[in-house]
Amino acid sequence: QKEVEQDPGPLSVPEGAIVSLNCTYSNSAFQYFMWYRQYSRKGPELLMYTYSSGNKEDGRFTAQVDKSSKYISLFIRDSQPSDSATYLCAMSIRGSNYKLTFGKGTLLTVNP
Amino acid sequence: DTGVSQDPRHKITKRGQNVTFRCDPISEHNRLYWYRQTLGQGPEFLTYFQNEAQLEKSRLLSDRFSAERPKGSFSTLEIQRTEQGDSAMYLCASSGQNSYEQYFGPGTRLTVT
Image (cartoon, rainbow over all chains, first blue to last red; front, top):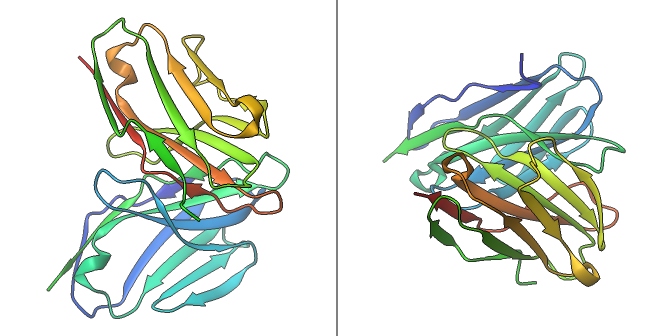
């Protein structure tokens, strides 16, 4: 079992839909959680980061962390064709040099 | 703030050749990371620098790989005697002293023929 599990999809939704992306993890030492967006053949772009359980909102994006269930989510409201990309969850352990452990990524397509 | 830059963006080399990649982190970021990403996978950690000190290396980093960060500024990653299995995207990320979030560069795509 990998430390971070993420459904690779692909996920296809119509424009304007609410998108839910999820990751589960097995190592309870993970303390910091991030979501990255990666367009084809580009580097990952940091979207959201948080270290606490609960919700964090930024525009159309909401990151949710449930440490008791070892489950994190990213919600995208009013999805746009420009949101079409691979979404990667990543997490790190405090005191571990903060190196990131990634999920495999979920490929999202938003259809106009 | 110009972001993390990497050079070259794409490198094609023949098996057995040596290659070197460069990463310029965000200015004043003292933490620098190298990751490797293969098709359909998330990035995997290779090595970590704090200032000029290389503090951690993954077991993925075989003895054919070496990384440096002279003077704690830019970093280089060298692969000697490249193999076809080295074909991947090599990503560099940087982070500030009191931050846990990392910012990535555009990556160097290596193709070994």
